[in-house]
Amino acid sequence: MNNEIEGSRKQKIKFYENLRSKDGKIQPRWNSTCLDTDKISKIRKKLLEMSDNACAFCGVRIDNKSFDVEHFLPKDGDKKNEGFPYLAYCWENYLPSCETCNQNHKGTFIPQSLKNQAIIEDILQTKFPQAQVYHQQSLLNSTTDRIIEPCFDNPDEHLAFIAEFFSYQPITEIGRLTNQMFFNHKEVAQKWETLSNFIKKLVANYPNAQELVNDYINLHGYEFICKKLLEYWQNEKQAGRINR
Ligand SMILES: [Zn+2]
Image (tube, rainbow, N blue to C red):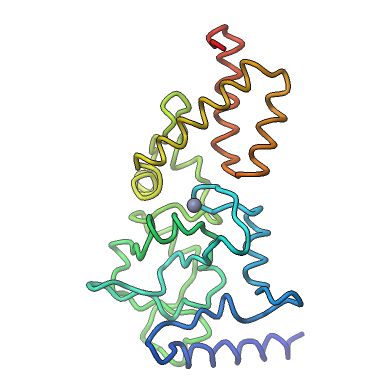
């Protein structure tokens, strides 16, 4: 076991030594190494399993073909800031994300307080003695100008879903930034309004509404929002405030 761990440690250091391909891009080894018998990366499979096949940010149903391995601290920077290339292969920095959340909403977001800091995986310590070693817990605990990290944070502490308005109400600064980034968009509000009307109709017209909502979740995801909307419309029905 120790030999195996040592072996993979050495291999990972080699990956970092050959971080970029000829075009300068970081090699996406999270997709192309640790392949299972079906040629799908075990890293991707584990991320899907961990999130119950849902985008870690918006909750939409994802499968191997339709998701990105998202780097919470972005591997690439932008014109003004360097990213965190030496966290490119760090497991704790990975999240399963739908393409919309990763590419359209989050992009290369870097908390202001971490901009242009050199943060590296612990295995690279001897190579970069000046850099800060990544410890997820202490880093996330001390950073308040960031978005929710769904594996680390309890989203309920940062965001409250208000079913009446099909939107989130931020509770903390972390919640505010998360809401602004992923949910405070016209198309998201429209999607949730449609979903709310759909669930309202199910609750008003079908005694097995809960089962039907579960079927919807199995197909499309959005478990959190669907359950909140279901609870809301069930209460409205009980109070006699629902029209068919
Ligand atoms: Zn998403």
